Length: 513
Image (tube, rainbow, N blue to C red; front, side, top):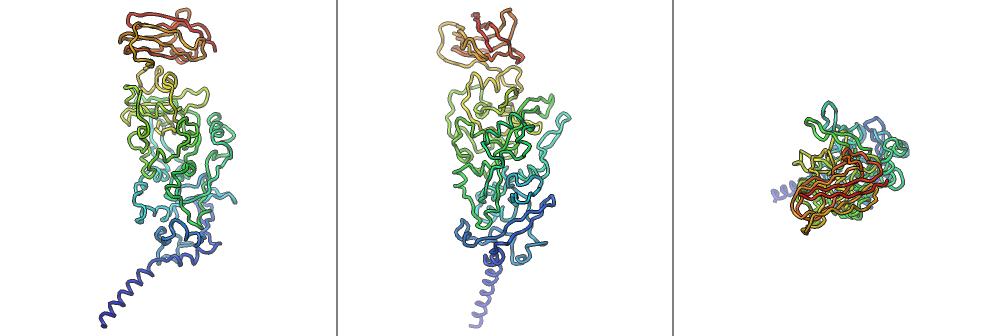
């Protein structure tokens, strides 16, 4: 009997250690139930910010995580440091994912604080403490790791320094912990007004515009401190149902195009391309003819697994056009062209710019992809302004023009009908007169080389519209009123002449600007 009592006492001691060795919620409430409880945090610039630490137990008890102990998320709190995790012995809070435009370089304006999303044990314990193990891939995803890259991939090309050169306390403060998306926040646009109007102004005037002087532009404030007392979390379903949280980060603006390297190898080819500052996917979606009403989650099925910084979505990403679209009426010669390269409106939105919208990416099996410039380097961040292209105009403007830098074959004739004509023919252009675009149709009865060229009325060569071998059928080509150098031609009458097998014909057309 005595032996049995000793065993029972021993077991009670073990149970007591397990129960009292873990911090209870009531122990946390001793301090955190005070509405005046707050903490002053010193930022990297030496300035300070006050963070509220009051937790309303009634609100927490009806929250999503009401059955969890505080220390199941705040894993850095133990019995041994429970009474000493404030003041000089405070547990480390690392400057992590951001509250948008909270204060660049940690400058705090009294009354206008925007508390950051500090990188704490709690902010990353969601998939580290046995709860959300299905999302462990997030730890190595782009959404998580990029914020730490103060200086990434900076290198020298042909004597110039290129790459992502993040400024201290700038882009390194952007990216996310679990709490960035899931912890409920107040989100406020910094400059009120229509984001597309602001975006167009910046595209037109660049950094010299009045809006840019105020900084922040279309960005959002994301203030976490309003929710500390209830610890309310967005669920995955609530985030998928709306773009509101996604747009808080994916809302940026353009700078004018810049000249950048397409290759790190000689002869160091360059091309004009739009320099994107931050991530304007929200604006592009609003402009999209096809997808403006969709939510991000309808295409991006798993944001916890986003791949590395090169954003090779064709091979690594979760978005496949083929998921929704059956591929039809596509040219066989476009096998190396990504869907998005044809079906986007292009970054070159300002008047008078001469930008390349696509390029061949040698690091991705020489595929044709949209062209984006950041810090004088061609990278591949896909646009979201999805359109149904006009093969005779927009495709030619992106790829098939003389002396293009992407190395695509110049294929200018667009099939109109595969029905075999009885005779060769050259039709009158339409419209005529035109300004500055017109379409010319022709028919060939057998497979043969075709050349259509434009001349002025003195017989001087202007440009070649097509020079290729085609199958029997009816085709169309377009002319946009420029010569072989890309310069606009003057008003007047011009001749277009076809040579196809033994067939030769010519017609007049009138350009009126």
